[in-house]
Image (cartoon, rainbow, N blue to C red; front, side):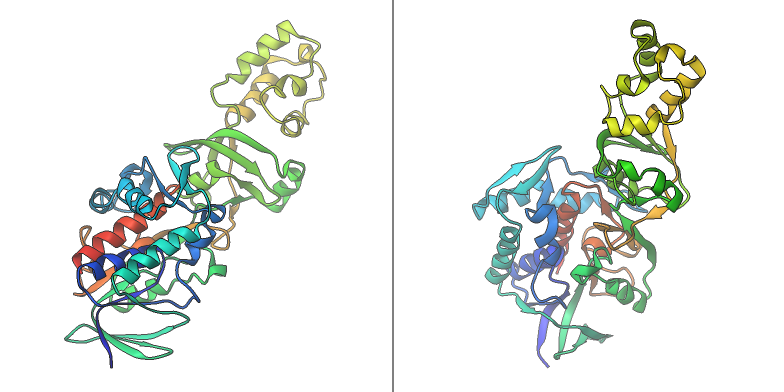
Amino acid sequence: MKAYDVIIIGAGAAGMMCGAVAGARGRSVLLIDKAVSAGEKIRISGGGRCNFTNLHCGPQNFISQNKHFCRSALAGYTPQDFIDLVKTYKIKFHEKQKGQLFCDESANQIIGMLRSECRKSDNQFKFETDVLNIQKTDEGFIVTTSKASWQCSKLVIATGGPSIPKMGATGYGYKVAAQFGLNIIEPVPALVPLSFTDGFKAALKGLSGTSVNVQVRHDKTVFNDALLFTHRGLSGPAILQISTYWQAGDEIVIDLVPGVDVFERLKLARTQSPKQSPAVFLSQFLPRTLTDYLVKDIPQKRLADINDKTLHKLAENINHWRTKPAGSEGFRTAEVTRGGVDTKELSSKTFESRKVSGLYFIGEVVDVTGHLGGHNFQWAWASGYACGQAL
């Protein structure tokens, strides 16, 4: 039975980074993945151009049961560190918005770069290989797969979460954690569109495809970005961001025209343009499809005929639209997973299990979830690098 210093289960972003770093330190490394090739989620990310990091990435961009857990890894491997690597490979990139960096050409360039780093470190890969059993031994671990069994001193779980199952994503990493007695924070879909009840979906059917820049709030968490009405409910960056914090039964509050006091503007317009309809007046701020929906229950056709109470109610529905989504679209469309291996079980510096010597968990499988915009990839790079340095 062939032995390696390190076996990494999962040849995605975190796994390849970890393998390259460990290999560069002289460790023999085998990466195992059930997919046909490495980095499948990288390949489809960012519309095929991979939002590979964010210039402003920091601990404030992550959610976890332990908000401090991510600090050490993020400080040890920064966005600039990854940018420097990208530049070494002469991969052209651009900033899209809010510090989000994308490849000019293709996400495959990032995969190719990581594969090259792994080759330089003499990493070995086994694809289309299912792990059937993991056994702890005095010397380390025996990993039995659909093709062969291998021994290792250190075992790294970099399998990600169950988001985007069409790419082969599963909750396998949680099974490994449970096997060795580690606690799991319940995994739920994150960065995911939110859906409405059937009745509400029917009422909003005419708005499908309408987009507007909004401020969305959940408790004390606020995001300013675009919202998109869909045939199922709400999507767009603002909704994906807030979905990471939202839980079933919670209310979200949406300001459809942030920075504008709609009630005061309506009252002023009633004085200055009394014959104007409320829909026409509001169309200077919002798409007409949306204004028509907002005023559909107002029988008066002119602002002059609408009293303060009705104007205030209309303004509240615009500046403070309160809604309780029925649910989310689930892991099928979720970009990442919130929850995972409890950070209390792991060292924040090495990602080694506190209960099982030689067992490590990195990337999305851990209970650390980043905001939209390249932060989750930066977590993959940072956690993979920190773990690789410790192997």
